[in-house]
Structure formats: C-alpha cells, structure tokens
Image (tube, rainbow, N blue to C red; front, side, top):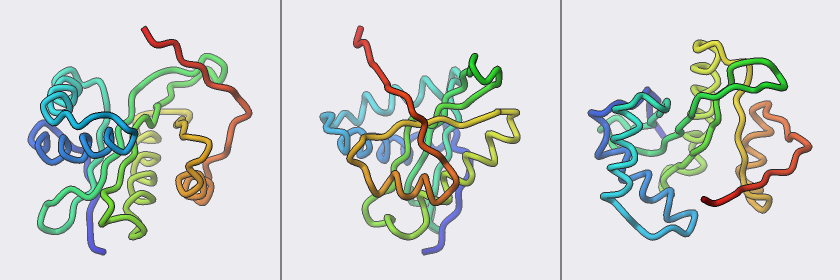
Length: 148
C-alpha cells in the first residue's frame, strides 16, 4: 500500500475528523461527527497537540496519531503522550500504524522530548505486539482515572 505521513493542520480537519469519529466509535463511544470536528478544531487552533495523518496518494485518510505535550518529573524531561492511534480498517496490516509511530518518534526527538508515553487496553494484543516490535517497552505501573 502506498501512503505518506505528514503533520496535519486545520486544512485537514474534515479528513481527520472522519477518522477521529471512527476511532471514538472503536472505543465504544457514540458517533459524533460535529463533536469530533469541534474537538479537533480547538486542538489545531490552540496548538495543543501534534497530529500526524497517513494518506493514500489520492489524499484519503488512512490513519492518524495525536500526541500531547507534557513533562515527566521522574525522568526530568519533556515528554509527549501518544494519546490516539487509529488506522482505518481497510488500511490495517499495511504498515500504516508502524509508519505513524515511527514518525511520532522522529517528531518527538526533533521537539526535544526525552520520551513518548502511551497506554493501551490490556487485551489489545495486536497493538502491544506492534509497540514492542518498534522498541517500546512496557512499564510496570498501574494507571488510575478520576472522571470529573
């Protein structure tokens, strides 16, 4: 499969919003195209995230990853949270996810990050295998969430 990975911007909002809505549905959220578009527009306008988009030669979106800047106090470095990674079903198993992760690592290095961090579901074996194949290692920590 032929594709490219580039940083997305506001001009890519429609393409990314469709993928983002599909991503949210994958995580059992109701479809909300308007909410997805609004959320991403805010991230672009406020420059609060780095969004990488994989496209086919015709410009159709194949997948994306979104990273948020933060800091690791323990490591005393700038870090990026790889919060979202999604590949459209028709593009899976064609190297799109790996390409997005590699580009995220490249951009993280360019931006002076000491590490990238992510979390995934304990039963998401395909994602865990992909991360491990690209040099990510599993941390021995326990995550908690407080919904506000």
